[in-house]
Each structure stands twice: as C-alpha cells, then as structure tokens.
Length: 69
Image 1 (cartoon, rainbow, N blue to C red):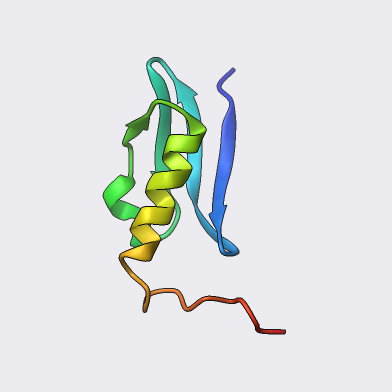
Image 2: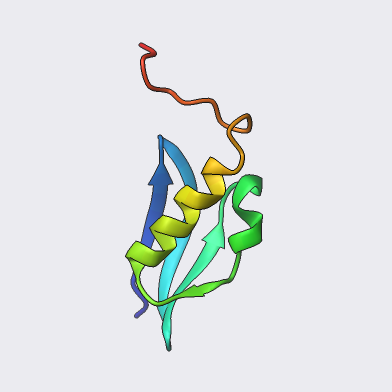
C-alpha cells in the first residue's frame, strides 16, 4: 500500500506526495503548483523545498498569512 503525505505551505494545501518506485511522486492540489504535478522527488524534503521555491516565485498568488488574526 503506498504511503501518501499532504504538503502544506503557509496553510495552503499544495498537493499530495505518494511513495513510488524511485522516490516520491507529487500531485498538485492547487494551480500554483501545477508545474510540479507528477514530478518524482528523491525525498519528501526535496518535494517540500520545490513547493517552497515555487511559492516564492509567485508572491502575489498567495499573500502571506503571517500577522493576520
């Protein structure tokens, strides 16, 4: 049975990562992360880094929720 993990960044569910042969496959849940959809990463940490990098390139897509109540 495959292991799946949700990748969230700044309270945004970016997608799901599933263990697969050769690594972990990412499935985007948000359009902002579509460029990573179905990409295979060596580890969950590598996928998290790619999601963070993708979000940092789109600052206006998701305003930071820090400082809001």
